[in-house]
Length: 377
Image (cartoon, rainbow, N blue to C red; front, side, top):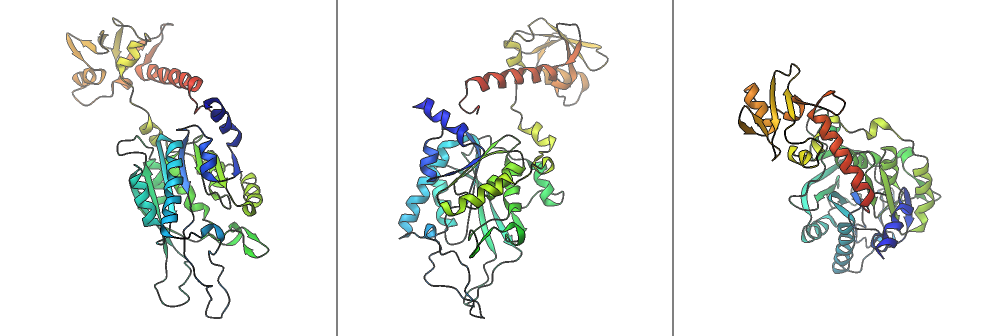
């Protein structure tokens, strides 16, 4: 059964699949997705048509897929798809889910009850919101996005420096002012809007830029008009879209196919890539035999100071047993990254930084994981 599940995923990567999202996700291997962007039904509970002051009818969200018989039925549905999402997300993956005041608070409770850890709630402030035509409430000018990790201590990805591109060079705030999806971006059919809740690409782009890197796998369980797959493809991410309603599939797939890759939009700031690197201990490298105890290391470009690699992955610096960082700090009198300052001789006699050895070790580890992991798809 496991073999069948693993083989099912490559077939649907970089495509929009028709089907019930919970059934499709049940056929995916666990822990294979880096990010989920979910735009589930809002359960708007519209009881009657909406009209503008000129008596023209508003093209509101009155689709069958947004109808639930009760709050209890909606809660059951919400917990089911969130549980399916939790199974396919990697331990380092994150969930984005968007909603209005009609549903987002109920979704938030389910998110926390299922063990997700809330990172932010982002307010999408609509710069061109639809008025309240009846004049009985305030104009609803926002939607809320929940951003959550798999757990309180999970090592999720956050591209802090990349996010600053959307914050005018400053730390990105949790209130995002963006317009509704209009104009040429809005997909239409013979009756007007193809999808009643199509989201702007600029909104989804921010979420993908913030917490993924090129090549990561993004899943949208409610793909609709194909916004998430379109943006993911343009940004150099792999994607899986799932959509139950056949009426949207043709236009959504055509939209994705027409999306041209944009390396600039998909680029991650190098500082974020460095932050995301797993901490590798010098002891790990020594234990692999890539550098053996007794080997001599030289410090800095001049190489005047030397230390000897000890059995436990420490350095013997003039009789003091210290870490590569501690030994460097003892020489400089200041905090020191030993990976960058200690040098070794490779098997060809070339003097190289320890950071080169670390990079080689990480490459070996990645190659080994790729040969045995079901996520290597």
